Image 1 (spheres, rainbow, N blue to C red):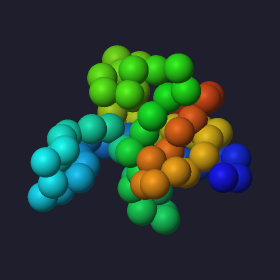
Image 2 (image 1 turned 30 degrees about the vertical axis):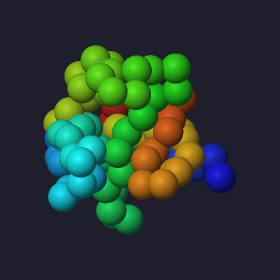
Image 3 (image 1 turned 90 degrees about the horizontal axis):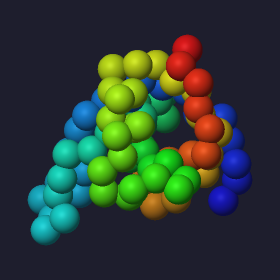
Image 4 (image 1 turned 30 degrees about the horizontal axis):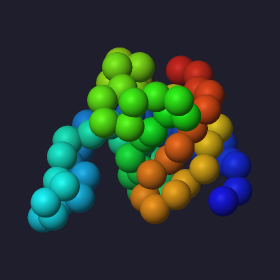
Length: 77
């Protein structure tokens, strides 16, 4: 995947709606849609760093993979 800069608001939403793995997670809402957030080196199931960003506007560098934005750095806008 291509490394890219994404900007948007971190929201809490359901991921995997209607499936056995449906759960509430932090996502980045962008002009292109919403992407589940996953931090490189962070816990993929519960990441306190990502959860602390809910409601904030951020810019992050990462890759979009299967509906997820896997990022390694961010800053609050």
